[in-house]
Length: 549
Image (cartoon, rainbow, N blue to C red):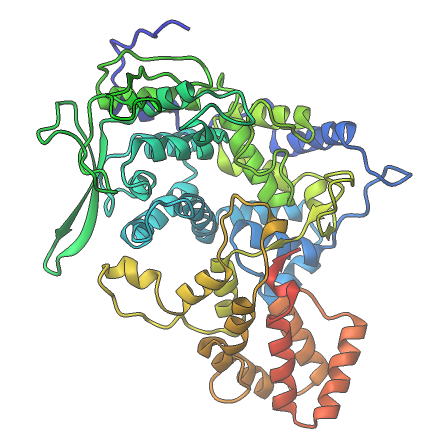
C-alpha cells in the first residue's frame, strides 16, 4: 500500500478523538449476538454426543459463583447466593452481569489480569516494583470507566512521561525501552501475533520475515526509559522519553535499560555484526501501511496505534475476543491465546470472525463483549476438565485455576481477615504492594495469563502456602475474634453452620453426602471447635475453592 498522507493529522493532539469513546452500538444487542454465536459455534463444532444436544444449563448457585469470579474476581456472599436463588425474575442472569460490571472490583480484577499479561514478560525483575502500582491503577480506571479497547491500546503504544503518573507507560518500562522488546509485546498483546520469533531469522512456523519484525521495530527507535530518583525519600522512578534530535552521547549505550533513543532503527547484518546494518522504514506487517523514514516519534507511534486499532485490521479485534473468550469459557479459538497468526488453525473460525466483527462494531466496547459472551450457551454449560487433543473442542465450559490475586482476595473475603500492612521498602509504596503475604501467594500461585490453563501446575509451595501461612492459619482458628469463632457462637446448629461454611467458601450449599460426612465428623471428634476448624481448613484447601468451575 502507498504511504498515507498524514500532513494534516498530528497524533498527540487528536488521537483520543479519532478512536472514539467506545459507546457506539453494534448491529445487534449482546443477547442477540450470543444467540447467533451459539448457532455458528454448533454449526462448526457440534456436540459430540449422539443426540448432539447441550447438557442442561448450570443452576443459579453455580452461575452466580462463576460469573462473580469471572467479572469481579470474588466469591458471592451467602446472602447474595440466597437472594439470587430466590429472585423470580426470568432475566436475573442478565441483571447480575450488569450489576457486576458496574462494581468497582470489575476494573480491579481485569486490571490485574492485564497487568499480569504485561508484567510476566518483563525483561527485568525490578520493573514489577517500579511500575506495578501505577499500572494497576491505570488499568482499573480504564476498565471501570469502560474505555474502549482501541483507546487503551493507543494509550499504551503512545505512552510518554513518568511511569508513576502515567500507568500506560508500564508496557514500555517493563521492556526497559528496548525497541525490539516493545515490538514483540505490542504485536503479541494487541494483535495476537508472536512476531518476536522473527527477530533474528524468518519465523520458523509462520510467514513473517525478519524484515517484517524490524519494520515494526522502526516505529519505536526514538523511545527510551530513563530511571531517576525523586522526592524527599529519593524514590526511584522511571520516565518514558522520546527524542526527535540526534542523541548527544552516541546512542543508547550498553545498559539494559535504554536511557536514550536513536532517530532510526537498523536491522543488523548476521554476516557482518560490526556493520551499521540496514536502515528500516516503519511498516505495519498486518496491513502493509508504512511511514517515511524521518517521521517524528509522536506521529510515528500514534499512526501505528491508529493502524493497529482500525476495524480493517484483521487481528486487533480477534486478539481481544479470543483472550476474553478463553478466560470466560476455558478454551480459546486459538491457543495459546497470543498466537493467532495466519498459519495457525482456529477452532470455529467463522464464530470468531462474527464475534470479532460485532465487537469492532461496538467500537471495541469491553463491557458489551462481556455481556455477549456470558449470555452464550457454552458459558452457562457445566464445567469439566479439558479433554485430550483427540476429543471434540468446546463441548462444555472448562474449569480454571484462579489467579494468585484472586485466591488471596477470596481468602481474605471468606475468612473475614484483613491484609497485614507492609512497611514501604526501597521501592516505596509499589514495593510494599508486592511484598508480604500477598507476594508469597503471588510467588506460589502466580502464572502467565497467556498460557493454557491446563498447563498451570499445582506445586508443593502452593500447598504449603495454604497450610502454613500465618495469615491463613490464624484466621482458621475457632477461637478469638475470627470469622469461625463468631459463627460458632452465633449458630448453634451444626447442620446450619455446615451450610453456612459451604455457602461462604464454595458459593453453594453442601450436598446431602457432604452434610452427612461433616456431621458424622463433628460427632466423632466430639469437640465442636476443633471439628469445624478442620472442616473450614478442608474447604479452603479444596480444589473447588482454588478453581473457577
